[in-house]
Structures are given as structure tokens and as C-alpha cells.
Length: 368
Image (cartoon, rainbow, N blue to C red):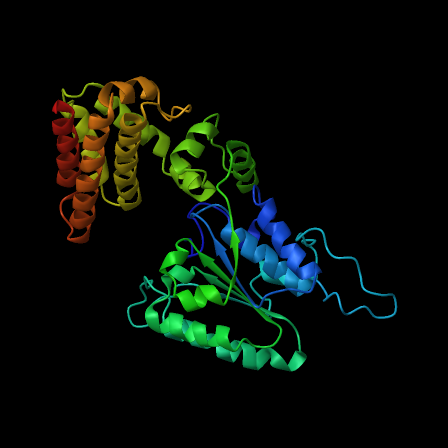
């Protein structure tokens, strides 16, 4: 079973040896380290699944395994490091891989001890545990690293507790905060961190990331990159849940609009309602929203993406969204169906009925 800081079916970020497409962020950190301007707190930002956690674990290994540059002994200061890479056979790298490095603590959502169910927030006790971590390990004067994944998950009490630590940072401690939506964090937390902004990945970088993770996506890396918006994490989820096939089925379904292929719609709805299909059901609604957004953009701009995420997609989108009026209509239905889907899932409406209702609304919009 995956943990809150891991994509199900993919390696944990601590076990990912190489980060692709984020050379600028890595170099910015190395420059700060090499010039003695290492900040005590770093905010790693960008969309989900682009390597923020992998970078955080790489930085943690680097900091714990690399002597400070002012520790020059008899032979002068060593040259500044040019890479974050640490030999996997290094004792610290081996301890981190085994989850046994005393200088590193990872903060994620934790199970509720009463119900044993995973909380949907990082709570104040999770943050307060850091005080003990710093106190118990202070005797050896070693560096300490904390990874918070994701800082967005902190409830208000946890955020305030972390803020106090940022205001009075422990000596030789580095905090790495991962955030998908930094605007939702306390401004005082953001102001006390140095930000590293990570970029979405190119199809080539995504292909290399898939190969490293041992996931075979065939020849459709370009389509995965297109639908995932350059997020390798989202692309892995699409691949593992057969998302390209589902998206192609949606595109085929709208091909006949305004005529409605009810049999195909029922097949999609029944698959979404199957027992144990929660993950695929959530993905189906996300793909419906994505398809509507692509229709809206096609109508608004008059041009579509150069990459088709499904066979004949470009021609189908062009027919259904020929102008800005159609684009506005699709944008409106995307907003309405998205809100209804979120409400329906929150109150446990029948999933099959919810899918059918959404598809019928799409059909009505195509009729104008």
C-alpha cells in the first residue's frame, strides 16, 4: 500500500535515484550551498507529480552526506559540489533507503490512532513531534533535515506550530516544505522560506522518468504528457489506471453528438459504479472535466493542441467547438458538471446515475 507521499504503483520518492527536467532548481540549491547562503527553510513549489518530493529527498541525502564547506581541515576548503547525487552505497544513503537515518524526519498525514484511518490533514501533533526530534538529536551537533509533504495538508494549528519553528529555527536544521498550492499557505510561512519553483516535464523527460520507475507506457508518452499537463505523477496515474483508454472512450462517445450513444454511456457508467473502482471513478470525472476544458479552449482559440490524446480528437473537437460561442458554452457546462460531480461524490449519490447525468448534460449542450 502506498503512503500519502507516494503515487500508488510508483516508487517512493526516496527510492528515485535521478530527477529529470529540474536542472535549474537543483542548480539554484547547489549555488546557495556553495556560496554559504544555505537558507534554513525551502519551499518546493509547482504542480503535483513533477518531482518536488524527489528533489526534497535528494537534497536531504546531499545535506546529510556532504560536509560543510567551511570544514576544511589541513588542506583548505573543498571545491563546491556540482551535483546533488550521493553514492547509493554511502552509509547515509543506505540508512535513508532503509528508513533508519536519525538525522532525517519526514512529516506526512498520519493515521488517526482512534479509527486507524488515514487523516486528510497534517495535525498539530505531527508538527510538535519535531521538537522532540531536534532535542533528542542535538547532542552530536550534526545537521538535521525535515521534509513536510505536503505543507498544503497542514491544518491551521499545525501551520501555526510550524511557523513558530520557522521563526526560531533550530541550529543546523533545514526544513524542506513541499507545496502544490503555495498561495494557500500562511503568507508568514512563505516569507520565511526560500522558494524553488519546479517546471512541468517535457515528453522526453517524462519518458526517462517512466523508464527509471520501470513503468512501460508503450508509444503514447506524448499523449500522457498532453493529458497530464507535463506532470509525471499524473501521467503515471493515467498509465496505471488505463486512463488513455478511458479518455479515448469519452472522445468516441462525443463523436456522434448531438446523437447520444446510450449503450456506450451505460458501459462507462457501470464501470464507474463497480465495487472497488473508486480510483477509476475519480479519474473518469477528471477526464470528463479535461475533455470539456479542451473543447472550451478549442472554441475560444480557434486552434487545438498539436498533440492528439485520442484518435480523431482534433477533428471531433473542431466540429463541436467551432467558435467562441461554442467555447463559452463548453466552459459553462464544465463548471456546472464539475460542481455537480463534486457534490454527488460528497453525498454518495449513485455513481452510475451521476456519470449518466453528466453525459446527458454534455449531449444537451451539443444540441445547442
